[in-house]
Amino acid sequence: MKISSLILAAVAFVLASCIEIKSTVTVSKDGTATIEETVLMGAQLAAMMQGGQGEQLKGLVMDKAKAEERAKKLGEGVTVKSHEELKNPDGKSGVKVVFAVADLAKLKYVPFEPEQEGKPSTTQPMTFALSGSTLTITNPDADKKKGGDAAKPKKTPEEMAMMKSQMAMMKPMFAGMRIAVEVKGANGIASSDATNLNDGTISYVDIQFDKLIDNADAFTGFMESADGGMSAADAAAKFSKVDGLKIEGKKVVTAELK
Image (cartoon, rainbow, N blue to C red):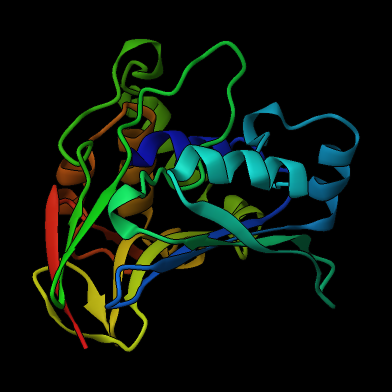
């Protein structure tokens, strides 16, 4: 799982409206699991998507057919448990898809990777192994940087200064924007060597832009790092103390399930 492709796809439309993206993998001690993927968009962005715009986010909002296709890509024995269209009182809309995983060992998980026509995915999937009550999660891409065309030149000091000066104006544009990928135990997690474990939940990515944008230096630095294809390991080390930002940088994480 690489943080840059997901972040940049979401940020591409932040000027149009907010977006919330959340993935939760819940593991049971019998070796099964569920994956809940939820995408919520503001009214303006939803209208743009319906009008055929928003190629950067294509595939995030799945209809039933797309969900069935995704289930096959996730591994043998993965099926669509439920598909629900969402419409909130605040005007946000989207979809929640729950996948059932019959055998955790066969799951090959890439969270919310937007489709890019003509560009095959280079992301290595997260894998899971269960021995007794010990869960092992492997993210092969944790220490890999995204190179090639996606690695853009660093912004000049003048460009960074301009970005900071525009923070107050930009803040409303990022209101409600959040990206999160987490792993839970069906009955909780007793212990883990994960970097971010809170109330039985391991956070692989949790970016709360409302909080992050309050820290001008951290926000501009993080956006520059994502734009340049920084690895999860490097980002986790660099931004470990930034409020509103959690990133798991370890390639292998273990957890003891309750």
